[in-house]
Image (cartoon, rainbow, N blue to C red; front, side, top):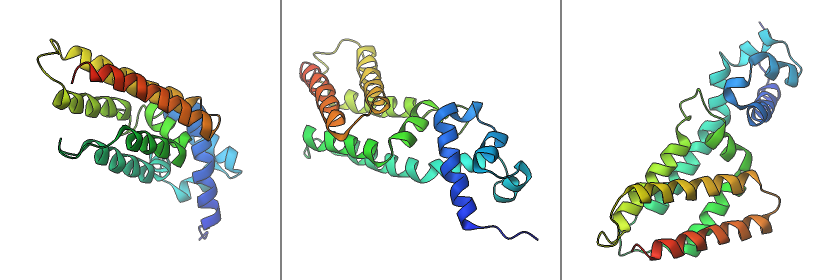
Length: 187
């Protein structure tokens, strides 16, 4: 019986993340992962039963981390106003924690239980915005959906264009200011 080695398992996870980032879940194969690790496909199956098992080993912890932080941002009553600076720092922190995994979840997880992650983010923000607006100023909730969607898509594009911490901070700040000033017209 072959002994499973932690260093091989760790390398599989690291390499699989690269493959998922480059190709997305649906276009990635066990053969590509095994080849990039430098092991046979049959050896890869000793460590993981299938591609989904590898994907979830790569992504589950990060997903839980993100959802916990996102729920913290959105789960407050109106008495406890979270400052826009605090929210910006939280978004920066989420991207800086693992920009590649953030992008995999947002755009490259089709075919997995996370394929709706971007929609989940949009829906969470949309619901939050519906709770915050002054209904005398908003005639149609569809505009709130459009604002939520464009905001989340802006964050994803900023994450994809990540070059440095300074450029990330500047881009997030600019997006937040734009969003905040627009929302001020509806609150």
